[in-house]
Length: 151
Length: 207
Image (cartoon, rainbow over all chains, first blue to last red; front, side, top):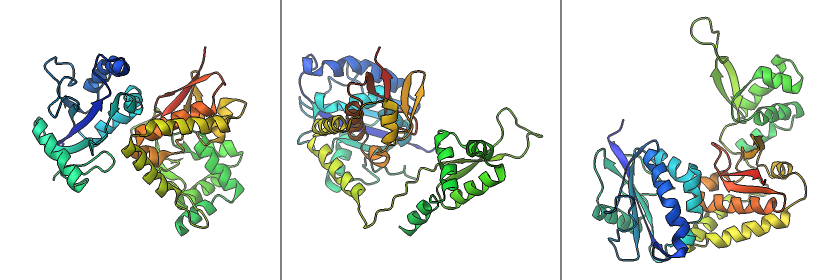
């Protein structure tokens, strides 16, 4: 097995506070999505706030910007969860009902981390900025244009 | 383009086209020459001849498998099996590149966050093209390759495969809306429910 895992960060601006009716379907579905992720083949780690269930309370880059960060064994493992799990694909399909990405620029970035390393939010921010500055490359890329792990 | 034209040209022979159809209709699992021979009502040598021509043209690919339940010494030589490869073939004259513009449009819709408008357009178009009749026949006509399993209609082919691979939430969302439109009023519910290697939508009959 290669010595690298895939780190993922995505950011979004919720259309209301978590208790707002506009977010109700998202909030109701989140525990299921997280439980499926935790049990998915190739899942390694995901960021959680002090509540320990999810990262919805973390707002490191301003009160309006929600973050989601995770680590997977491979691009295929992440793709399988993101796009082949019906509950998750359905949530993605409806993402604009719950979130906007206006003025955020790129809102999802992937990069490789050594096995066992837990990425930090500062590191994630650096990768997202790099993606915005120069586009997809080996240091910061997207699911549509993945790069292989370092050799 | 010559390569694609040669591949498609191999389907002009009716017997060969029937052999191709037999492999495709058999589903995602590779099929042996005996099954194709039975489907066509011809001998296995003739079936194998057509199948190998289709392989040479790049329209089918070969895998080898032993008959189920047998392994080890004495199980015999693995038999040749055939299936449709992932590679797509298309020829347009004069040259047209609708796929290239589709990617740009999808990028623009994503960047604008206009998914909902795209779903609305797809649903409207589906309704406009809806035909009375059996939903399975309607979806088969659209190239979805429907298959009914335990009361659920699963769609073995995604007509937007490559675009859906690049923009899954957007294209699967549009596809769901399109299928909802096409089948509106027929008493079925379409939902996001990906079939491995196939479409992201399945349908079940309303109770």
